[in-house]
Amino acid sequence: MDKRYWSSRIRALEPYVPGEQPKDRVFIKLNTNENPYPPSPRVLEAARRAADGSLRLYPDPEACALRAALAELYGLRPEQVFCGNGSDEVLGLCFYAFFSPGKKVVFPDITYSFYPVYARLFGLDFEEIPLNGDFTLPVEKFLGGNGGAVVCNPNAPTGRAQPLENIRRIAQANPDAVVLVDEAYVDFGAESAVPLIDEYPNLAVVGTMSKSRSLAGMRLGWALGSADLIAGVNCVKNSFNSYPLDRVALAAGQAAAEDREYFEETRHKIMATRERAAARLRELGFAVHDSSANFLFAAHPDCPGKDLQQGLRDRGVLVRRFDRPRIENYLRISIGTDEEMEALCRACEEILNGR
Ligand SMILES: *Cc1c(COP(=O)(O)O)cnc(C)c1O
Image (cartoon, rainbow, N blue to C red; front, side):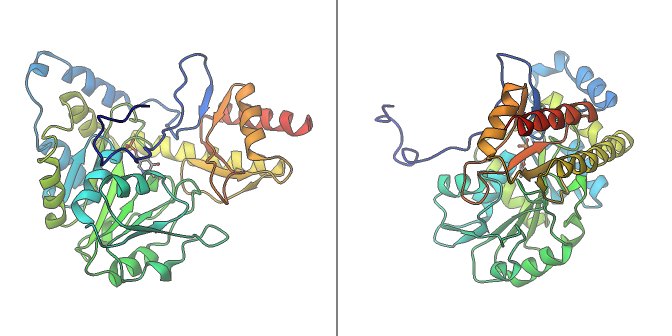
């Protein structure tokens, strides 16, 4: 590729690669942690109602109604809530707002692979701290002496949750740096750090409606923290794009924040399916990590991850695999419906029997 006209800032960048969204054939899609259930009917109704002639007008740049609904949901004040176009965008704005060049940001070596991409984009120094052999977090390596820390809880792609006490220790030990907690999957069984926000002015928590509220296609994410931290994120947002959320997304997001009943029902269904699928995979000989997310992280001692992934693809099932040291044999399998998980397990059985 001819990068002659590219800015020198981006010539060496390696962007994040999202999971495949196939267009050529129908797959059982267990590769991008989407929710197998549709958004709540109330959310769809709110989105339809918002799609009218008012779309000629700009949306509310401050997302006041959505922020009020999220503040209510999380027991915070609206000034402690920032909303953006998916939590990937919010994470990017937070990296820019909170971390300074020349001061090292730390995060685990095995975690959401977008973090190093943001760090490079914004010219930040960073260190990827190796997780322990069992993929637990070496908490003591996150205590102090750095320019910020990012912890994904539960972690992706391992599914492992952090006890709240560890987040508290990390926030406590880094009073001069921001600790950013990515809670994309927290609703599937981990403990949220939001209750610590009023105690730690350096703690920011990022969330999304893509996973537990079935709205990956709507692009709704947020950051929660002290009013001063949130003002910093607004400063970046208003220096880049004043209107990150459109009118339809704002309306859908508000309805989703308010519909707690549907949310509770679907997240519990997914957690129950996850436990059944984990048990089935273990019966097939897989090593499956305990998961607090809407995916499983599993490897089979007798079959390389690459072969399993291809075998599944040949049988119409997509899963994700990261070609990285220590985890190349693991599949990250999103939790679908019971029927989809049954199809996955049958396909795995067939692949393993054919070897
Ligand atoms: C899915 C995911 C996100 C981002 O989701 P959005 O769709 O951009 O809100 C953020 N962090 C992690 C760890 C994720 O897996």
